[in-house]
Length: 112
Length: 114
Image (cartoon, rainbow over all chains, first blue to last red; front, side):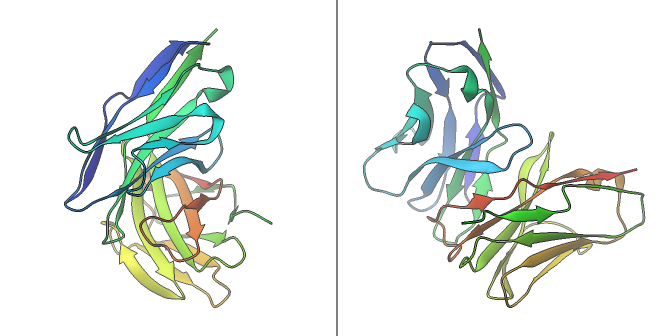
């Protein structure tokens, strides 16, 4: 059975400092992995996805994530946080049965 | 190109009533999936429709049902509402609904049950 765990429910960083949002997954097969972002009162928007090509995936707005099979992780990073990055971020796993599982989300706070 | 449209944006109902939510996918998308989002449980998958057929179903009681029309628009119905049904209901569309495909989300319908 597949599952996804976001290790932090809240993360606070200062503007201009790096962002790290952690995600661990469990899947019986080679999964597809995604990060989505949800700004207040908005739907979810895809940041990036991994589908067994390059292990380092670049997304929109300067975000990237690295797939590490040995650690079953897919952490999301950004070198320098911006105030507009304040939002909730969801790690998502999907396998060949087309079942999609969302993590519980990490709320990112950006301090001025 | 218009995005995924959900109506209404807000709903207030009382316990025991029923409610119908609507979702219009992006033109050309044939898969529509529904999610319930609450602060405690996060996003939970309700069901997915493709070409008018329910293809996947989450772990929700039978009070939650849905359907999809020939133009790919989808409706979700909740009967005999309970307080715990208060949530943001999101729908998402994609071309085929396969696992590696990007989902396009609507802004959701915020349902409050009093």
